[in-house]
Image 1 (cartoon, rainbow, N blue to C red):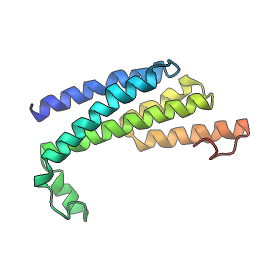
Image 2 (spheres, rainbow, N blue to C red):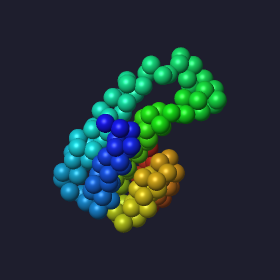
Image 3 (tube, helix red, strand yellow):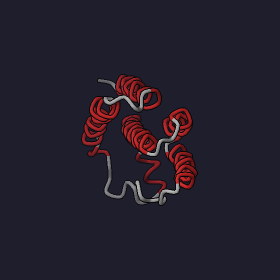
Image 4 (cartoon, rainbow, N blue to C red):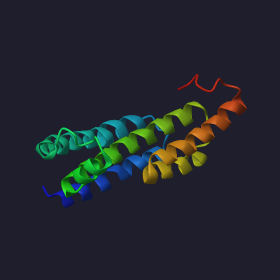
Length: 147
């Protein structure tokens, strides 16, 4: 299968998971469906891409910025990195949704950091952390008690 085809498949593959997290976080099957039918297939794809590309990776591939740039100079390496982002961002989104549900944060407010987690990963997590901090202070719950 070509890298372009894999790229198209994984990009489409994550969308139902994000929609479930954003629109049906309380549905009893959301977490299981997203984890087992979206995140795990992405991790399997990532493992395949990683293992198949190991012969192109040097021992010092991550030792300098220049070596990382060189590593990501091939479409296959960029695809591997992209799948990594998709899997981790979706997992982070799932954890945000679960935590927000536990803290009874309005799901419509949580859609904002979920969107930014989908688009910009850590920035969305930062937005959720701020929302979470406000909610925890309002509820009088110790900040780190539910993490």
